Amino acid sequence: MASSNYDVKQEVNDKYSLRGRVFCKIREDILSGKYREHEELREVAIGEELGVSRTPVREAFRQLELEGLIQIVPNKGAYVTGITAKDVEDIYMIRSLLEGLCAKWATDHITEEQLEELEENVYLADFHAKKGHLDQMAELDNRFHQILYESCNSKQLARLLEDFHEYVLRVRRKTLANGGRGKVSNDEHRQIMEAIKEKDKDRAEALANRHIINAYDNMVKNGLYEIYGKE
Amino acid sequence: MASSNYDVKQEVNDKYSLRGRVFCKIREDILSGKYREHEELREVAIGEELGVSRTPVREAFRQLELEGLIQIVPNKGAYVTGITAKDVEDIYMIRSLLEGLCAKWATDHITEEQLEELEENVYLADFHAKKGHLDQMAELDNRFHQILYESCNSKQLARLLEDFHEYVLRVRRKTLANGGRGKVSNDEHRQIMEAIKEKDKDRAEALANRHIINAYDNMVKNGLYEIYGKE
DNA sequence: TCACGTATAATTGTATACAATCATACGATT
DNA sequence: AATCGTATGATTGTATACAATTATACGTGA
Image 1 (cartoon, rainbow over the protein chains, first blue to last red):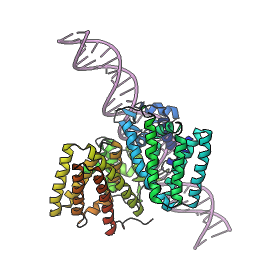
Image 2: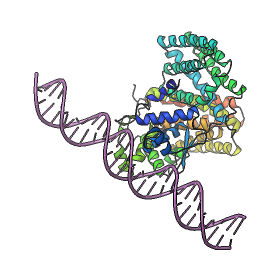
Image 3: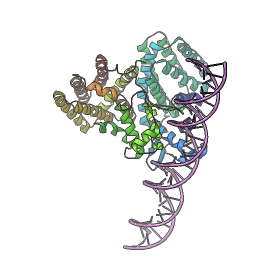
């Protein structure tokens, strides 16, 4: 599962280079929760763990800082950024608008192949929802949105949404594992897919908008973001 | 003028440290057009120019890559990213939505002081518009939007908008220097300010939306983005 | 003349060494 | 006992050295 989540960065940051590997590894460790919020990351420790010197680690840190995953205090250290409840709410509201725009643009630019993959995705997800296969559901959900990003014909928007998508991974993973939402979420995917298929871009936009808001509401309803600080 | 544009990054990247200075300097040189699109940036050359070694330069490169200003090809080099006409269009459309959201949120959270500074800003800009003071107009325009970013009560949204705001600086600067738009733009600022003052968040959102679209339309109308490639 | 391969130079990638800064602990002074 | 100052250790910041990779130039062969 992790593979598809981080592949996204390959273009800008090929993970087969040392630096790329270091970057991806630290990022994965943060997103997976291995490094906790406000934890201090030491250059040598991480370097030794990954078998590299401080240099690649430092460069990875600079990037992670700009991604917002860590915060570097000059001459002091690097600390894992805490995501507050407010941050999560903001990001979902922003994402709602952007996913809507993405769906609208995708309606104009999606290819036959991409549309078919969307249909297949929804169909498969239906199956896994019935079976209760949470990992596959998460994977398919990722892929559904990824297809839309790819088909919106905008590198700028795609880059932005990919960043957000990953940023809330810590939260989102827990959300999908929650009862019922997987099925409902996929129904919303189907509606979005059908709107795009019928070239109704305004409906696609509105549905995508709603889809993200619903995901957020569901998260709040289940108190899933109490895990984050109130600050 | 440059000072206020780059101050924004101070928080994440204090410019009084060596690395911060290097980062800001290179960024400024790219935004100002000193380094042209697709130009290759060599670590030693820039290091010598700034009187530092390759290490801080490399770290700055990593950040600039993530900001989208340069692209690093492994084992080859760092190249200034070209902004295409399509990129500019996309960014304005995205910004339109986000500036709208920002204005909406600002309506709820703006303080008396911030509102007063907005009023003062609009009043002053009116004066400079009549006098044809383009530099001051640009400065006030930056500040107007910056105040909104600060008053929207969302670090996430503010960070995003600040990034975009800077990203299109190369374009925007030319736009404002264009006849008439300065005055019209400030009129739109006034309307937005008044909507916020009257706590009409939906109107503020719609006006802010429109404000960015208008800026873009004006740019297109004047053929100002022909300077970028068509790719 | 053109194509290919090798050698050399240039540039980036990584590791290490040293300098500067910050945190901690201990002791002196009040 | 509490507080301040200093000393020591730990950590980051920067510079440099070396390795790996890539680009260029030249020469050889067809």
